Length: 119
Image (cartoon, rainbow, N blue to C red):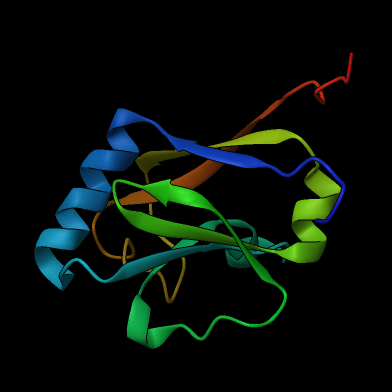
């Protein structure tokens, strides 16, 4: 996302609570990935770090409670300066995501941010 505004990522308290529940169950070495697919692929997915292979086109946006959060470069470029807000709501998580089976699932909300201007 060279020379283009990149998305940022934050989390709500319910998302952090669910993430801490998963860390207690699976350990500290977790990873998030936000892909641009449809259905489950458009949800933020949480994996054990050893179960997900990052590619050359994955970009780290930040960390949520110490867990790195990645997005595909193309998707990040399309979203530009959007603030991704990771929330947790009632429901079933993605088929391969660790939140599946908890009765809660991660959800990405967004807030469009103005691109910084140079004075």
